[in-house]
Length: 109
Image 1 (cartoon, rainbow, N blue to C red):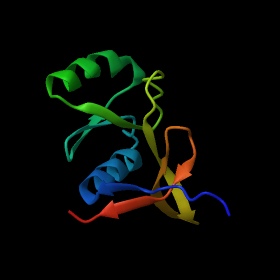
Image 2: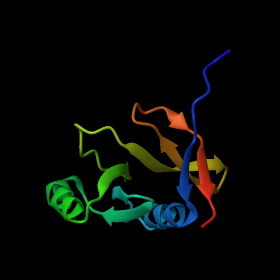
Image 3: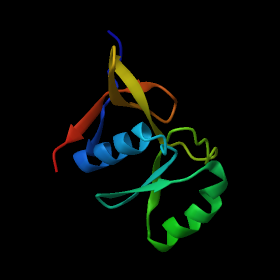
Image 4: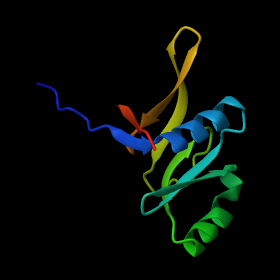
């Protein structure tokens, strides 16, 4: 029997913000976390070093990246992207820190 992979559960507002950013083409950036609160930062790989300082000041930890960013290479993060669920229907997909697809659970908040 294959090993079941645990799903990632995120708040509905984070899912909506990620989908919106990815659909508008501004979808490159990072998600940070402080306790149960998530923060979305748009940017490119060149923005990463400045963003790290901002997150440290806010006591946030890196949680995920999305779109075309590849930084930070030294920290394993979740990765969000757009996926086509069926012809013409776009959805949010997630990969774990090893690049394996995971089930995404969205919690109503």
